Image: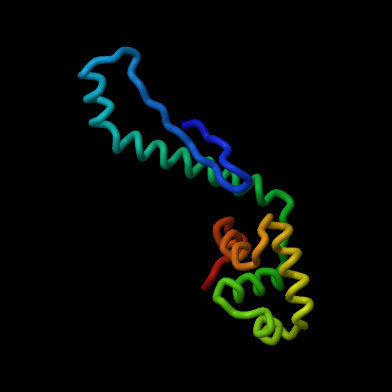
Length: 125
């Protein structure tokens, strides 16, 4: 499995499996084991994704207010409603959204909420 850089936030990988010599028997063996090879590739890719998530999260800190904002954003609430629910001003919510976007490397808070769930920073109940 070879991880390949494919942009700022995306990676791709290639699993290359071959026999030392070309023969019909080797081709059949590779073909008959394709499910096992696919499972191995999936497992390695999972390990790599967890490594990338850990690397990306190194130094990122979000507090409970940030988590609450992200949770409401994920559920589709507008910033004005979020501010009302949390008892803070809309400008404070907007400021926290900017901080969260910067920390997670996103441009939109809705994307940040999905990233937070993906990276395990936010758990929905």
